[in-house]
Length: 333
Ligand SMILES: [Zn+2]
Image (cartoon, rainbow, N blue to C red; front, side, top):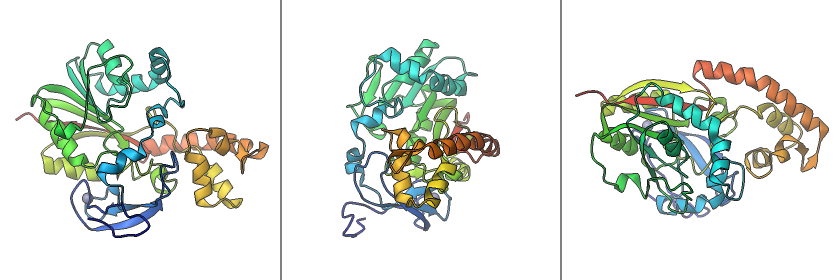
């Protein structure tokens, strides 16, 4: 339905994307600090029934492409121009190793990676003996190593049911409009006993709640372990593991102390987030005070990194880290 809100005429309000409930409470307002695709404000709701977070109002599905600039697909590499394939792999090697550990106990079989981006992960898994395929929504994303990637909406595609040993979603489910349908379809395509591995962000983390660390409005659903457990119970799936750690997309707790110092020093929340979340010039946040290089800020940055590291480890140990990976198993009949 349309919000009817004049300042955001295109935004839409939605029900909980995991359980369908329309009972929610507002957590906070936010906007696109990373890529500044618009000045709209979006609201993060928390579902009263399953507890997940979701953006509502949000851009309508047919307009979300406006919020994915080309640089989004290179933002992890931290560059605004294309890299060679070997440079991409070298930059991502640690991340690819960390992803592969989630499949390390499986014999190589058929793997489908949803949200395959440039094909890094399936390229890597093929080198480990897997028979790989990928799906990517946006056919503007480059495919430099010519991997077998199908372009379009996963929900519209036809695959052979019960034919995959493993299906992966690396930082995908928080971006899609129907995450429950994605999980349901993936389960339908898995062989009995097959494994779904997904990495999402965790609403039960300091980063998500206090630092608005999610990438809005590209992140539409912010998960919790409890909401996933409910979803799996409803779908007849087994949630066999949920773990938070920062090995694949690291370190989002960094910056909290520096953020607090900047706020105390007169920055508004908007100003501090605008420096912190933009991907172009990290030094603006980590080394400058109001765009001027500052020794004081550098000293606080060093202290920040020193004290947040052990806190992050502890929170990960307790399951309250920002990046959360979960494993669902499709039961045998
Ligand atoms: Zn819900």
